[in-house]
Image 1 (tube, helix red, strand yellow):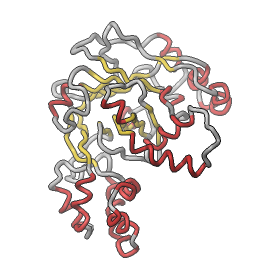
Image 2 (cartoon, one colour):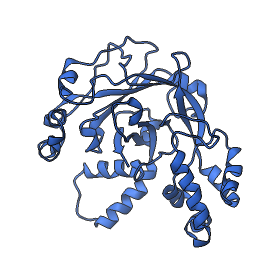
Image 3 (spheres, rainbow, N blue to C red):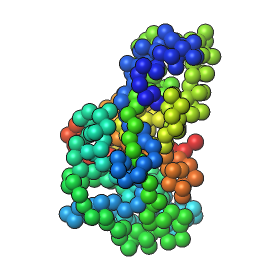
Image 4 (tube, helix red, strand yellow):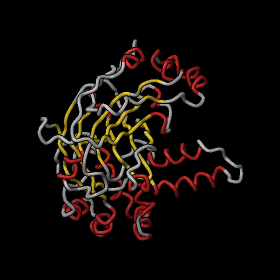
Length: 322
């Protein structure tokens, strides 16, 4: 939320929290925010059709586990949802990240590959009800150029009678290097004992409440400098609408493996909370920016070790709304 770390001391001073600015600055992570742009200089494409190499195929989701039960429970909300739960179906293309443009922006260093594109696909119908890697696919297309690829006819058939089109409205956006700050609960989790004690101290309660209320009122569409941005982030800390989406991804990943019964529910929650720190945010997209969704954010999160290995085959998509 900060364009420069030098903004942090004065920002915290506004809320009488100057003694904690240095530690919070150390906890901030580099990220990219975005603003609308023309073709030149764009790093993020939302919607439209993807530039997809001929050697790659349009991805689809598999048959969802318990798909019949989910269709029975939620199917009344739309015919496309019933079809998506019924079996394999093409995913929607939601975003493309130009990795060369990201590299030029400089903020993320070598955390992402330097060439090609990351293509993000998701199931916006069933993906609002499932928190698994099945609902999405992230493809690293290493080619520098590729032709635009139209969605398969099966996707048009899938959305018949739905409010979501087969091709989402297209917008291109330029990157803005920023420093992202952990949210209140994450800060209490990863901060020093002194910081944790201060956030929980009744004597500081009003100051912290004022700070985080101000952040909630403006984030993620306004930086601390007052600069307006779009509600999307590449890298950095997630901006949760509910709980940390990394926790949800861990719980889903652990739930996909048969439980042994050796852990209680509380022990399982503690294990998920510890394991979430092995995950990182890849991309979050504010869905309202498409103009066809009322609200909500989808978070693409992955394990740190997979990111280092350039393995984008196990990304999870987590949907949240207020």
